[in-house]
Structure formats: C-alpha cells, structure tokens
Amino acid sequence: MKEDIRETRLENGIVVLTDKMSGVRSATLGFFYRVGSRNEPDDLNGITHFIEHCVFKGTKKRSAMDIAIEQDRLGGTLDAFTTHEETGFVIKVIDDQIGAAFDLLADMLTDPRFDDADCVNEQRVIIEEMKMNEDSPEDLLSDIFHREFFPGHQLGMEITGTPETVRTFDHARTLRFHRSAFSSENLVVVAAGNIDHDDVVGKVQSANFSWPAVAGGELKLELQAANIAAPIFIQHRADLEQAHIIIATPMVKAADPRRYAADLLSNGIGGGTSSRLWQKIREERGLAYSVGASTAMYNDTGFFTVSAGTSPDQVDEVLDIVIDELRSVAQDGITQDELDLMKEQTRANVLLGLEDSAGRAGSLAQCEMVHGRQIPVEESLANLAAVTVEDIQSLAADCFQTDKIAFVALGDLDGLTITRDRLAI
Image (cartoon, rainbow, N blue to C red):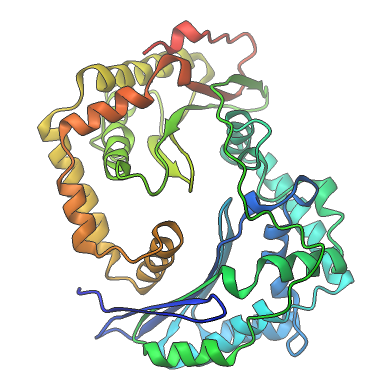
C-alpha cells in the first residue's frame, strides 16, 4: 500500500503529519509530545505519567463521565502512554468521526482541569498501579533492570514515579508542569487513514495549543548523558515459582545507521520461533516457556536484552546457553541463511504494518521525533537489505563484551552467585 504523506510545520512549533490511505474506513489520530520521564527533575519523577492519567479526569466543559461516554460513543480505541522520551494519545475511529475525535482529544490536552480532589484520587490509582507492578515479576524485573543499568539517571527511574513524589502532585504543581511540557513546540499531530491533510491542519490551527511560558515548570529540555553500568544483581523472592532473568548489553541509539543491523541481530538471537535461543532453550531442552531478545533505542543510547523465565535450578544452564550464543555471534558471526531469514521476517513486519492506520500514524510520529523527517518505506527496506553478515558480526563484537554484560535476576535464588567470569565473551 503506497504512502501518501504530507507535512505542515506551523509557526507555533506544531508539526502536522498525515498519511492518506485510500480504500479504508478507519482513521487514526495521534497527539505525540516530545516529553517523557527523562525530562523530569528528580522531585517530580512520575509527573508526566500523572498528567497522562489526569487529562481523562475532566476539562472545563467535559466531566470525566462526559469523556468516558464520548469515548464509548465514538466506538473506537483511545490509548495513552508515557515512555522515557515521549507521551502519546492515540484514537482510532471510523473516518466520519475524526472531527469529534479531534475535538475530544484537543479539549483534554489543552484545558485539563486538574481539580485537587481528582488529583488525590489519581494519586491513589497510580500508587495501586505501582503495587500491581510489584506483583508482576516481569514488570518488577524491568524496573530493577533499568535502575541498575542506568544508575542515578532518569532512564533508571520508574516512569510512574514513587509514592512519595506522586503524593506531591496537586493542582498547582501539575498545572505548572503541564503548561511547561505539553506546549505547542513539543507537539507532533499525526493522522492516518481516510483523512484529508488540509482538514487536519485546519483543526489544529483552530485549537488553542499555545500559551504563555509558565515560571516554575521545571522541564528539563537538555537531557543528561546516560550513565550505563554492567550490573550483576540478584533479588531474592522466595514466593516466586519461576526465576526471571535479563542479560543485557549497551546498543546503538535510535538514529544510528547501524539500527537496522541491531534489529536483525536481536531477531536472529531471540526474535522469533526459529531464532537461536528459542530453538536451543525452549525447543531442544524445554528450559523455558518464554525466552526472547529485543532492542530498546533512545535518543542518545540503547540496550540489547535477552529475557527468560525458568525454574530457579535451571538459571545456570539458561545463562550458559545465552552467553555461548552471544560469544558465538561476536566471534564467528551468523550465516547468510540466518541473515536472509531475518531480513524476510523484518520486511514482512514492515509491510504488514502499512495496512493498519494506527501503525502508520505511529510511524509518522516516530520518524519525526527521532529523525526530524519522514523515512520512506523504500528507504527503510533498502537499508535493511544492505545489511551484511560482516555488519552483524562487527556490531556484536562492539556490544557483546565481557565488561559490558549485565545480569539481573528475580526469584527464589538464595545462594545463586554469578561472577564476571561466568559472563565472559
């Protein structure tokens, strides 16, 4: 399906991007802000995520119930999320409802009420969310990993904040940060599906996304360089049946030309059912139900992870298999057949994603926020096709080094000791 992308850059800093998809009845509208938990000072840790929640609590002209009813009436899906580097609000509706969807989201994002009573209620909700994460081993391990891998840095802090910080988010403090962070110069508006670019631009221009600067917003625009460690950290939890482990190394940043090789590398090691770790750990030895590899890339850094859940008495065996595979790829590379398979898998994922308006809308936003331009799918596929086995091995050799390997585990692991020698590449 051919891309039909248009862009308009407004004087107030808003970037409007659309991708017209003929022959569909869906339309996805997204408001993406270049603000995430990395932009928060320590004493406001979690406030971006708090705002993401609180905009659903009502505006001057809509109550929380009004928002909920209108969301249901539109019949689509409304999702909101906060990451370390962005905050997004995305709604997918039938094309003839795009105007109503825009009006709803624009009202929520430009005129949230942040009533003190609502703030207190949402503080409680988010603290319960934290407790829920504590009860989920995978979520808890992810938080532990970030804390240990990025010590003393915003990337190591929890996106939800802490109970102590969240309890300080009253009306005044929340409004100040909202006015500082959720402003027009940080906003990218995207739409994909059966939409009209000029119509979307007109709607953006008619909404009030600009307001005077607010003192005391405390937004951090200049990001602190990431501190990356290579921790060996084991947290004992006797109540868990499985041990959950992460083996990680630094990886390239989001705009690095080697990002295509990085994605192929992680896919080959643990990205699918034919990958090395899936076959050796699950299929051949039955050591885990879930095992996989992935990459996360930020504006200035990234990491590669292998994660698995296994019985505590099998952690040593799983770890040895993972390290053996990382060592093998770093020293001997991969075969051409493996690379060709990974390329076909990734190409299929890219092309199939073009069939969904939500996927296209997300791609518009990510290209703008990471690269400052739209990358045509033909360019991405050409860069993917150009990756060689030598590129994969070179990247693995750079990243898979003994002194860079991190090991983090959670489970009934009293007595487990992992030395740096066990992680030797």
